[in-house]
Length: 575
Image 1 (cartoon, rainbow, N blue to C red):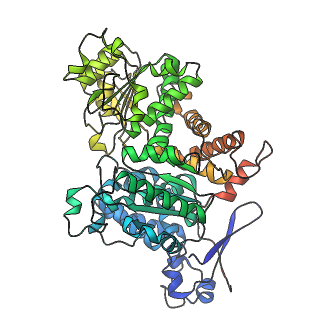
Image 2 (cartoon, helix red, strand yellow):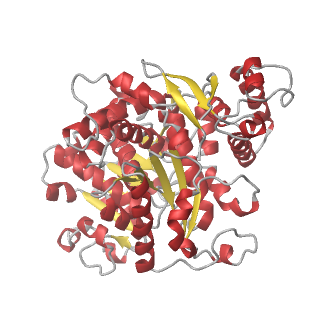
Image 3 (spheres, rainbow, N blue to C red):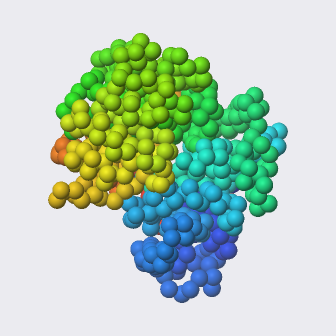
């Protein structure tokens, strides 16, 4: 367990750290190590004399050296490894460096580069992080949880590695996703890294490459069945809640069916979020709402095609439907404006292979009878749907690279002055379209947000900054709002409040030709706006765990909650 505590002053700022660790033990603790930044007084008091070079550095001087080392690496994976080794050695310096180069480094520690790290997990010798809970150890959960590093936990990011980004089942390598998500929570919202826990539920893998790889570090077994899986998750959640009744559970990269089932099962019994369904939905809807402002067309008048009807696609559709209902449509009127496509084609009321959460989005055969083609026999489903449904919003969650081709985009743009097009699939190689093509095919009129990072595009003498619909703009702020309000549940109204707050940060409110979303470098500002909105919604919904009202000093509450990457004076604990 951790042997330190943060000391805060009356204003809520961290003023010192108290610890009982000394000597090599202190230098070996990445959450406390300051390297050559330990002062002379601290070196004497904590038994560090002779263990460090004589020079005493500032964190800024250390950061300059680390950035120079980072810049020497030529591949993104090498840069990712370099930064993670720094995290293993000195967490404060890691967060200091990355926070000052956030737009450059976020794609390195998070998507898309983390996908490569996940795939190479078993062949990279690295310091283990978090908890690895194998199904074979399911009867020893209490012992496993007691072996955690940190005593107090506010937030756990949990994965089973079944549906990692666009690369599928990666088994135990999913732990890198949980760790990366928590890094983003801290970098973008100041979530205290001393109170978080990455968790890998190792329930096997159906990836034949991993099962046959002698280097694979996970439980070498095919994924367990639905009943065993649900019982295991139930056992885990109960054990976790027993120790931390107010813990916030973030589920990430679970398989499509499991993700939905877990969310439905626990959202009324725990404070929980699914990153792929809800956080992705929030930032995608915020992009849409910004596009609505830029287009000048009310949300209730838009028509939507979603290409990719899995957990993410349905999650985004659910959020937009909810927004349309809030805008005055009935639920049925809103649903009638949606056309969802999966691997088998358009979701229609005549299909017998639909998943339960897809059924509300079926298009009736009666409507299809008036279309200019037999969509059920179509060899170009997306193009035919676009030509007949005439959408003003096109969203991609398919991982089908290039699916939004010239014919599809031009067919859409033919009837819409400013089409809203969101190719959201990760990684970059699986994006449904390149922004440069979208602008060319729409004569610069497309309103674009992508799931992966893209460079600015020059078109017809104008530079376009491409908005990244990165859920790092959403989930960190939601988490901060939950933690600082000690919310017992994450309600639909809290998610809506997050969406509105994020959309109001869009540059289109100042310039309708601007990018749909703020820059990732602005995530600290955005996260605080989102957090306050989420906390206020928790109060309105009666789920806040502490007393908050109109007199609450929100800025002070944030200061009392967040952690900043700075070196603080150390006090020696005698306890």
